[in-house]
Length: 150
Image (tube, rainbow, N blue to C red; front, side, top):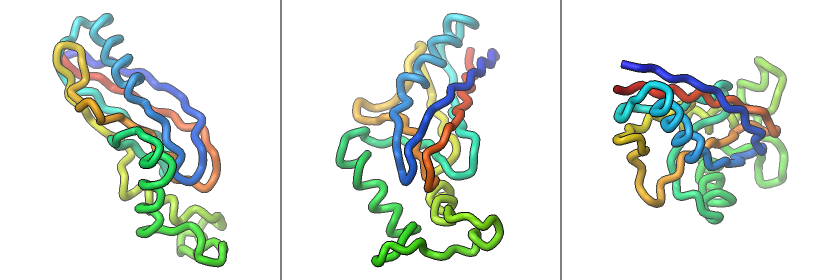
């Protein structure tokens, strides 16, 4: 079984900024096919850092710019109705303001694994692989892509 690994760096936007990384997943699979001749297997994407996640969603404006953030804010709001940052015990440990970010990231996942067959991801037509920034500040994020197959 061959293993191919590459890392790509992204500039993310705070408070649930999203980047469609579907083409980067496919590019990593294509590179593994070219380098090792693999045709079928799995690819895992893993984002390094505690307050970002990877997921699948339909990458359309309503979802990307409103719906997912609104839903996550129900579980873990950043500010209250007056605009003040909500206190989380995490803030006491690190003296920061991103406790809500850690909860959002935990509800997502830092990784996602997708099978591929004949060198192509097995995702649906409206299913985009998406990097989600949960932190309260813009960040630079690495995603490690690892392809395993034969």
